[in-house]
View 1 (tube, rainbow, N blue to C red):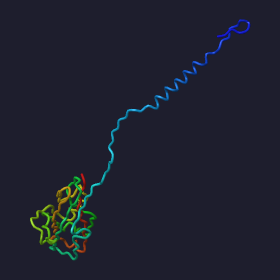
View 2: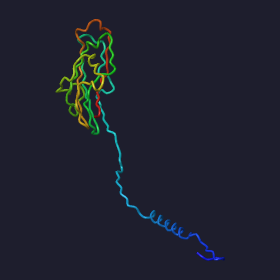
View 3: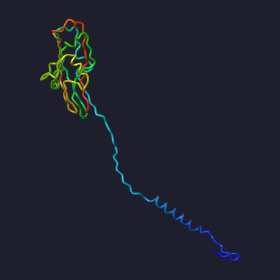
View 4: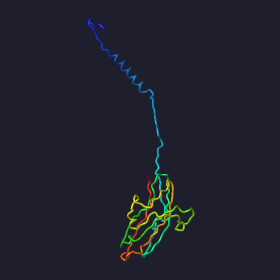
Amino acid sequence: MATGEGGRVRRYAPVALPLAVAVLGSGVLVARTSQAAFTATAEAPGNSWSAARIELTADVAGTAVFSAGDVVPGGSGERCFQVAFSGTGARIGPVRLYADGFADTRGMADHLLLIVETAPPRPSGAPAGCASFSGGTTAWAGTLRELSTHSSYAQGVAPWQPGPTGGAREYRVSWSYSPAAPDSTQGGVAGAGLVWRTETL
């Protein structure tokens, strides 16, 4: 405050103090943003996944077990082979047998009897075929038409449980054509694929 001409008092706006406060406040802001921070971290690095592997192989894989022609009442045949499982350790269900691609004319399938026997795996070095089949038990028996009603894994027959990394069973599949098959079945054709399957649990 000062006295000017005529004795009037001059007033000056207090501008210096707010400027100083602004500068001081700016300095505090810089100090707070530049200081170090406390941190805490939890990590789980290197995650990965690999799919299980399961595989079934058979001595007859990719070929027909039977291809019999000119079948007459009383005719029969058999075939022996091994089905083996290998895997990486995943839990699996039993291996089951079911029919696929069923076909029949003239009712031949109603008179074609199938018997499925299973046995422990053949000894190492033993020849494939029925000569090495021993200790078998009947796992399923019925006509081809009856087998055709088992057309999925859930409906499969003759189950056996391999271990999580391996296992095998010998099979003997026998067929016979009923001696009582009627003349109406002459010229008939019956067939179905045989499928062995297992699934992971």
